[in-house]
Length: 310
Image: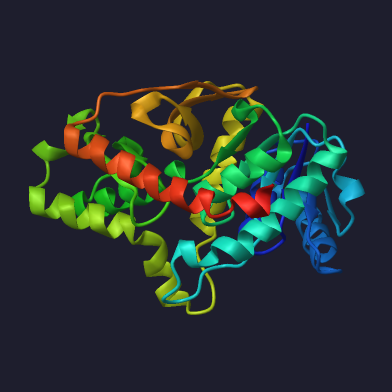
């Protein structure tokens, strides 16, 4: 198993280290355009092997040739958000970057699974799909896992319970239009609505939608990376070990939930071939309406990129 991480910034480097520590690949390649950065970080990671007790080979490079024959490619490249900047503000700049990256990686890896992390997430996943010409099952985005993790952590904090006992789904676009599905949120099987007042739930839902911005506002010159990297690695683990995990990921919907030809967060089964099934769960009318509105925003932005992707 060979896994390439494109982008040696905070998200990419953190993800690469976690992949190595969990020995999810024999080889991890960390790619970046900044000479010396991926090489130095990769060497540092590799030298932590005797302490972390892993034998994964970690290499840094600025040459796409070194990414050849990758089984999984994690794309984190792009500009990070700054305070006051929405994910949509990043649209054209990051679309150009992701287009170039995708074109390059598929030159050297013929049938990889691509996991997109670059923002705006759902739109960049669409860019990766169009440019790679890979089957839709092999191009997916990391969003719902992260958004659900944030929702779960806020619930755990509010109730003072273990995060392990909380199950939650956050669907829709990765941004202010995301859809936390409260009816499928539970604590040790107990519906959240039985444990928490409705106004408190609404406050946590709102905080989840603004979770990324909250971190950006604290950092000033950066954005979240520990939770995004951990979320991406959870997806990689499901694929590498063929776990058949049910996780919310950005997937190409073709009729599910009344949405067509749009990448949007939905529950999927992840295994060795990528997305093996998209689950169409029962949503209340307001949730379904919110999901479709979220998809419409993604679709509009993707249409604005038509000339770039031609």
